[in-house]
Image 1: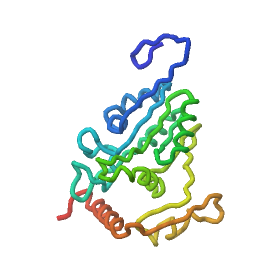
Image 2: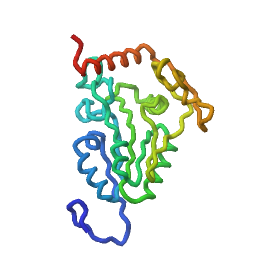
Image 3: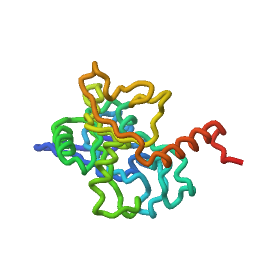
Image 4: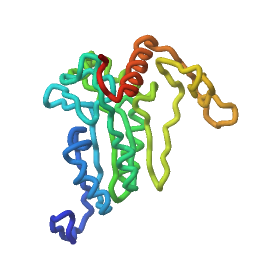
Length: 231
């Protein structure tokens, strides 16, 4: 049979095809080929380690860089673009499996790797990779930064299988600027502690409040100007 232009032959043993890639290729230059492979239902495990920038060229902004992040090529106020959602792009293709992971939660990581290995078809493991030189933090803080990314919701741990998306349950949600008028975590409503839901978590608001508030105010002001800088 032919797989994306390469002739293959029957083998007496099953060989697992594993793709190991950084975010630059996964989100950008390699995305069209990957999309075609998923659409064809090819059997491969796709592991993406994501440090949210072009690390080989000094942590330049990329399609993986989140809004407000400071990179080698971002403006003084931070990156003005938005991070692509690779998990959602894969899910739109209806693969056999897709999951997000972080090394700071090794049990969740191991469980998802084992599940992905046992399946056949296109499978994604998308790992957040905190980067000490690119993000400018002490390597000793790497595990804690990974944990905080999950706790704050910046990096939600998710799984897709059989048409359903499941979010890993959180013990606590930490965020910066509350919204008394429209917020759903202690503002206009409180979905995270709703009495009729079967899962409730603790809430810690107001972390780096003024910095977060300033980012939000500036972001929506920019949107109202149509993305143009202030006069």
